[in-house]
Length: 307
Image (cartoon, rainbow, N blue to C red):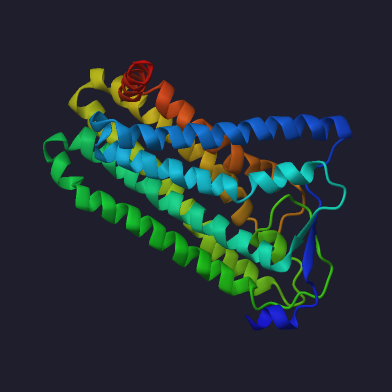
């Protein structure tokens, strides 16, 4: 924590999202409604999985945990983005900025590993149906979730340790609506070359490798199904399409930002809206509207509530 003592900068100024007053009002209302949908939609999935015994399976257990992570990920950035939209002077303290960096990477790293666990679950269910209950036993599901959180914390702490002891002596303006490693490192009063490399090796490499492993796993599942019966290929593709859509939406901004850690434009802040707001909002929409089990469970819950 010595960095807190030697740093001259005690706060950062966020430039946020630009636009006219009318545009900012429109964005405030839009993101407020989107944030409400994120919270209610994802918590509804969690409640549904807990309340309905028919959903007490590995897939829905992992899905409920994914929903909780999405809630946490959106909570780290969206509320401040909404409240800052109508402010002229957007300021975040040094401590709050560091905390935001930490929580973003905890949630992001956890979600990456959990998406891999969900891909393994689909592999076991589609390619190894006779061994599914053994491969995805309750203990292993819990282990997957614990490993996800441990990986997320380790990843976040490795990022946090890179910047917490850096000297910040000005300027203190961040062209974004949130604090993150690529933008913060540009403001440090030290040679940033080695930190750029470490950022690529950490977040960038982790994002890219996880993304390609997920795509390879889905491709392997589809090839395995196609070899068994070409008629089942469309059924498997329909099952995996929701997973693939969310994976592409989640990882594309991550790879763009962290494989190019010293951005020269402000496009990254708009891309990350996809992760913080759009992807987390699509999770309950895709998994609820396209999943018959959840639709049936929701209908049962509605009938019980109307009694």
